[in-house]
Length: 273
Ligand code: HH2
Image (tube, rainbow, N blue to C red):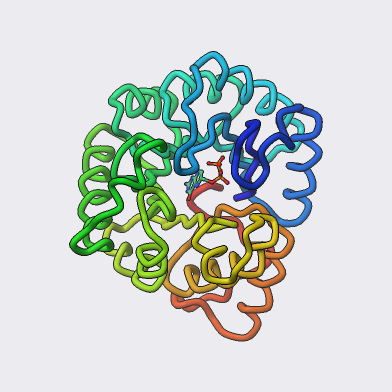
């Protein structure tokens, strides 16, 4: 999953892809490099980010989604808001990446009405401004398994058939929590859903490798994501698609994945075909 943030303030690619043509060129390069999904967002959810109005978010993402149609690739809408998800799906998106984890009942209704897959991302609160104040868990992985498990059950009961789960790296988590999540990721497999991980360029990588500039964190991101794949991740949300594809192909050549089948550079996630 390649990232396109049509925002002025995203921590890594802010201000680069507000223009739909630039966004489409970049998305085309990511698809050419091996991305199977392009994730479009119009509101930064980095810790402390200012919320934006529905109309502003709409004005950012809809032109980009329309500009990506010619790529014939899967497009996800990265949002907390049901209205945005609904408009994005009508404009040509194919799945919802809900960074508020279906907290808002309208989002469930939109997913059911459109019959699309949903990514449920763990966060302790739906508020990027204060989520780091809630980075406190008796057992972080158990808290994520319990919370996502309850949300998956509700989503299934509501009629959502394809559900992807995401432990929400950096969403109300400390550096130590993020490391523990990557080490214990396999515990999420008990929920029976494909696992997505988005560690790309996040600040905990900077803390560990000493890179203050997000664009300098790709090598650390790749290692974190290879570890996630070995522990059960099926989808990776990344900025550097080419680097990740190369690393995954090399890793697959050296050793099979835990599922037994080596990751092939031409594989498509079966759930989304
Ligand atoms: N992380 C971000 C945004 N959306 N979606 C999923 N499923 N998983 C993630 O870990 C995730 C996500 C935050 O990163 P980014 O979009 O690169 O930055 P910003 O929030 O500043 O726009």
